[in-house]
Every structure is written in structure tokens, then in C-alpha cells.
Image 1 (tube, helix red, strand yellow):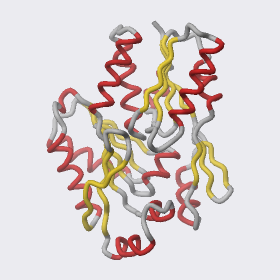
Image 2: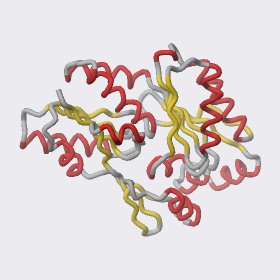
Image 3: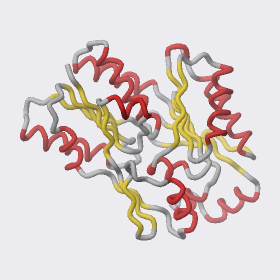
Length: 279
């Protein structure tokens, strides 16, 4: 059985996945003070971070249209899947569901499933890789859905922000709190909720302490690491990401570690210097 996985562009495809032929990226878009950015292979992270830092207003993102998903589903593949940014954070999941409905109107026999990642960034990547794993094992369409949904239930996303400026600009943090946090060098350690929202785990002074606290929490909570892949995405800080990977791997025997740079939407969320870890 042939298959196709459409991953919205908040999910980073590795070079190996891009060459695989079973994955396509569905781009979201970003607007920075009237400058329109398509989150595809043309995305320039350095230019985006510069524009975002200079803009008094927060960058605005827009989810893919249902039509983009419908077109992605217009293929001869037997099994069609979409993996989207958490429905708690974006309308991408709803657009994928509408794209599925539009496709099924014309092709009622197609097998299409939309996975709400309840995560973002590299979390979507791992879900797409799980789909491939079960497809390669010869699982039926229904078995793939069941197994991947169970995997999503077990997945946890952590992240540490270097800067709180994006939160301030988006109204999630008052100007006073942002100034105090900046002066005191306070860094939040965040993680996903089971529903796919964001919660603050703790906050500490200094980026290194924040990363250490995040690593401690991962080490304390991850079960059966030898059976799992750990994935790290970073926004313009490869050395920091490598350090986090090495420290985690010293403490837990994950079967594999993946490190990628963030694309547009993940760069918007993580901001310059941000680290995202998914297990």
C-alpha cells in the first residue's frame, strides 16, 4: 500500500524525510508589518528574526487553506494522512479536516485521516515518522490510526525561551512582567498539556539553569527511553541544541536523537535562541 503524509509547515521535515517521497509540507504564512512570508523552502530565518525584532507589533501567522490540503490529498496514494499543529494553537487542524471533506466529496472512497498533533514543531515530525514506521510494518489504515493516536497520547513537548519578547508582543505577558523578567534574567520552562495547550512548568534565572531544569524534568518523567526517539528543534542556536541533546543522552538511553533548525512558524513561537524538545 502506498501512502502520503501531509505535514503543516510548523513541523520540520528532516533532509531524509524530504528525500523520502512520502511526505509533503503544507505551508502556513506569516505577516511582519505588511511583509508576507510563505513558510516553505524560501523561508529565510535570519531575515525573519531581524524583521520580528524590529517590529513593534507581533508577527501574525495564518493557517493553510482547506484547498491546500485538498490538493495534497488529490493523489493516487492508498492511505492519506495529515499531521497538524495543535488545534489549541492554530486553525490548521480545522483546515485539514475541511480539505479532507472537500476531497471526499469528489472521491468518497479515499482513506484520509487528520492527526491533531497536540504539539508543534518537531513533535509533528515524530508523528509523521511514526506513520511511516507503521506503514512499513504493513499495518492496515485503521491500525496505523490507532497506533499513532496512542503515540500522540504518550508524547510530551518541552521548551525553553531565551526571550519573552514574543510573549509580550502577543499579549501573553504584561509589559511590567516582561521588563522584570528581562532585568532579573528569568527564563520560563514550558511544556505541553494533554490537550495540546501550553503551560509553564517553572521559571528560573538564566538560560543554562532553565535548560538544566528542563533536562531534569525529562529525565524524571520519560518512560522506556530505549524505545523512543528524542527530537530537538532550535531557533538559531545549534550549539545550545547539541548541548541539550548530549546532556539528555548521557542520562537516558534514547534509541535515536534528532536535531533540526526551526522553520517559519516554529521560529515565531520559539523566538531567537529558543529550544524545543519532544519525546
